[in-house]
Length: 152
Image (cartoon, rainbow, N blue to C red; front, side, top):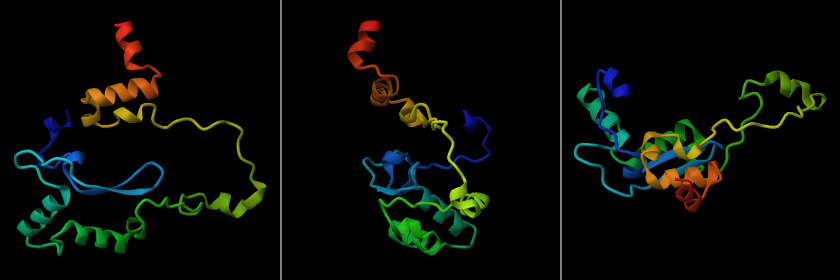
């Protein structure tokens, strides 16, 4: 849908087609390996950026994903701590007043609400997957496949 408005579309590989680092919703850095090869001219994102830098005459010094990861860890040390949750401080979250108030601040009794109602369908690839639709029905909506088929 957004591609209709784009001036340039870069052939990035899907998350199942690339070796990558991700930060999940709890702040944990996770690494993945490609499960399948990308189709046609699709490439891993870092390779596309590296190729563009070369064309622009300012070649980035990264020839492997390991070099990119090492640079990420230099800039943001969290990326060097795979599978460890980075606990943000109150000041890094912009909550300086809360940090200064200390123990005198009482937490609210209001329960937390989920920011994402259906985690299983948060990206277009997952939304197109029959398997993820089953996960969504089972875990988000509390329906098992047998119940869905009986209702249909």
